[in-house]
Length: 443
Ligand code: PMP
Image 1 (tube, rainbow, N blue to C red):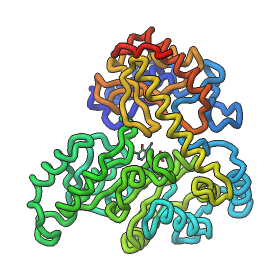
Image 2 (image 1 turned 180 degrees about the horizontal axis):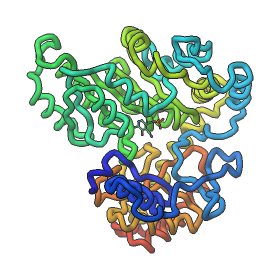
Image 3 (image 1 turned 30 degrees about the vertical axis):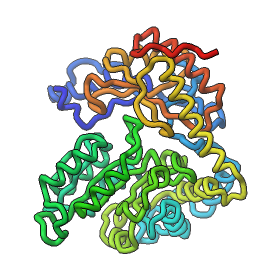
């Protein structure tokens, strides 16, 4: 039965309701008919209560205003912004909410062209192509890049959109142990000889797919090592920067900047606009030839309506703020703030005795609960105290590795973080998830 749930990620605020409902639907599916009246549980509807960078949310059903520790709003652009918002409103008036056309049939506005140049320059590649959805960027692009006769070597904890794209491509798929370069090399060696030219091996193409920051682990990719191995075995590198672009690196340019990797060594750079940029959509950046080829052959480019113009404008404007091209230092401040907030929160949680996954500088911070039975208690008790956390369980994680996943934002103030820490500490004692001794207070 559990395997029936594969591919579904029960991630939500107040997970128990979601889980029960999903289970009900799956059981009903197995029986082929309704089995009893459905449980009265579904997603909470949330309401925007203030223009505070998506920092607080109001659940219309259960509790009132709470501090949002679950949003991917890394730089706080999911808010009315003094630079972005007037321009987004202007673009809505000028271009409307939708082009109602595909890119090739009149759906490419001047904004779309500007966005692609802007993204390519920002991530450090010669060209880029944008899509209306981040998830679909992975799942639609991989089948265009590779097919039967090709080999995809994928990190074992890659996002579902990658898994889906890889499966849809028809290529042979091999998985390497999460973020373990030595195992990647072992898998490569099992399939090709070192130094064999691309033209003389049994694979039309080999693509290694990794993420910049792993969304359920908060871990930074060991990119320098992975890039070196791919060079040695002449495999292409595909990097999903959904959680790292805009969020890490001195100027927000992601893990390449943070870890000192030359972007020329990453063949295909993918990312989404739904996190640091406060918008929606996804991109692929690469060589001019690659992007040109995608523009002529990718069905998601040829047959899907182009990204909404106001969403495109939001991305252009937020990148300008990040780079200081708005004439202010707000971008640099936001980048400094998210780093400071993330490192403060992580080290305080560790001092309290929690087991926190991930690396310094990463705004993604999973707190290990292990036992899935602790999930409802943890999320419910946090919510009672007006702190909203996302809890994650099987099949998004292995069965006994349940966790609460905190996402830190530059928009969180020090007071917000201190309040959240107090609540998490109290609930941590209640639920019994402080697995290490607390560090004595230095004062
Ligand atoms: N890649 C990764 C690594 C993700 O975590 C996500 C979703 N959070 C996506 C792709 C899909 O992006 P989007 O939500 O923008 O569709």
